[in-house]
Amino acid sequence: MPDGQELLQVFDLEKHYPLGSALFARPKHWVRAVDGVSFSIRSGETLGLVGESGSGKTTTGRCILRLTEPTSGRIVFDGVDLLALRPREMRAMRRHLQVIFQDPYASLDPRMTIGASVEEPLIIHRVGSRPERKVKVRALLEDVGLDPGFASRYPHEFSGGQRQRVGIARALALQPKFIVADEPVSALDVSVQAQIVNLLQVLQRRHGLTYLFISHGMAVVQHICTRVGVMYLGKLVELGETEALFERPLHPYTQVLRSSIPNPDPEAGRERIRPQADPPATAERIPGCPFHPRCPYVMEECRVQEPPLLEIRPGHKVACFLATSA
Ligand code: SF4
Image 1: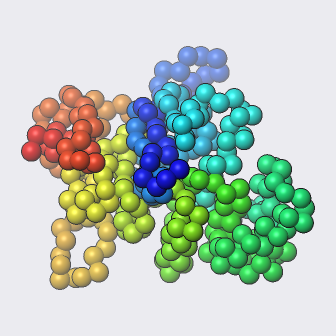
Image 2: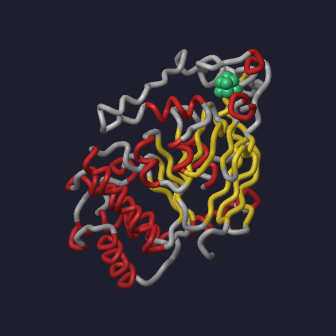
């Protein structure tokens, strides 16, 4: 698919979990982990999803891969309706959609050599003969900047950054088109984070990859993403080109996240915007705008009506009465 065309479209995605109900009883409360999220990702781009813990960004990524079954919605990947696929068809499709996890140590089997871990997806999808797979594993390790001779070693022999490189090699094994990178650098030292982010960018260019990059770190998202979606309590509250969103964030919640980025210039004195309260419990259904209990600019209508996500400039959407009435 040529760059710039929509590779993935997500329509009105919902994932609700029942809360604390007795066995066989109808649940009284639901956690709306993802609550009507729609967006698309163009081929070759990196879309960032940011938000605090509990915002629904990881669940959105898992639903796209069908590692978690959505409650409702539609997910179209390369023209195929993923939620209409049977389990067997989805397993075959999964070679095109891969994931890089946050904790590379937890995602690698400590009893398997890293060569075996990288080879495993090739075996599952019956790719190549044994000697061909061994050659492929060495090439994959080289691709992510590791010595191919490391194939016979075990995960505990590697640093966090090296283990994440192994996780990336494993994700690349089946030559996917699309990768969900779920907090891929959050568990790493700051100096190593930059190396892994640069590697992901190099690999994107080399292999024509498309990324959904999930992170709670705004600085890293600003560096790697083409566009950014901001999630709050299961909803997308702002979506736009990275530069526009960071230069002039429109939603107060985006402004809060943006102001948390450390400014390297102490003279610049960026004002730190603080929310009015702590995040609510995720089971709490908030009437009106979900951010209103914490919003420093709350108005009367915000308490009773939920603002829709509206496009207020080409490619820039926001769900806030303040921004849409300006
Ligand atoms: Fe704040 Fe109102 Fe905008 Fe919600 S709609 S973010 S409460 S100003």
